[in-house]
Amino acid sequence: PSPRGASRAGYHRAFAAVQSQREGGGRQLISGHNHCQLTGVIANLEKVAVTPAGVPRPRFWLEHRSRQVEDGQPREVRARIAIVLVGGNASIQGLREGQSVTVTGFLCQAGYKGEARDRLQLIAETLEPH
Image (cartoon, rainbow, N blue to C red; front, side, top):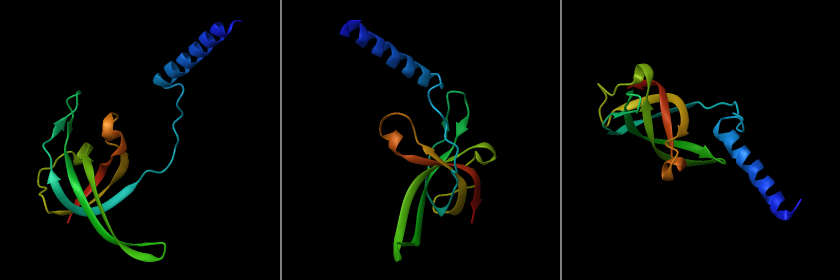
């Protein structure tokens, strides 16, 4: 076969691999732990977004502050993360900015485009106001 024919064959193999990934056949899900519990203060309650399927997705921003030990040295830790309420927690009614809460859930990407790919959000499975 000519080099041109070989490159076409390579192109078709690469195209088939990409197609397989898009259909879920080329990606293997890795099972593992993804559990997060944070305490903090509600910094900002956002307007409730609605998914294309019509499901409300309330979201707020949690500010966490604590003292942790890192490599034997105490340090102050600060974090700000978006909390998305789902299921039985899917209401921000009764919550207020400045309120202390404990949130338990799992971490995921905030989106799949642009800078959202590099930002994490916590999907809340439980929410306990203090």
